[in-house]
Length: 67
Image (cartoon, rainbow, N blue to C red; front, side):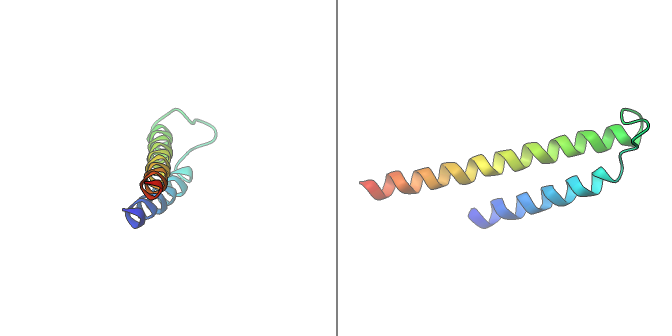
């Protein structure tokens, strides 16, 4: 599960970097730029979710080791 989360984080970073190139600075809310912004936001959400998953797994391991 840990490696899966890291792979998803790496893919999300890659998609975010790719879509930063798609944004037109002069018109960021039109056409392809809007799609790029939405995809960057989705990538950031995926990264946050995977970090929450990794943190919860670490907490679960610590609680399990206490007993």
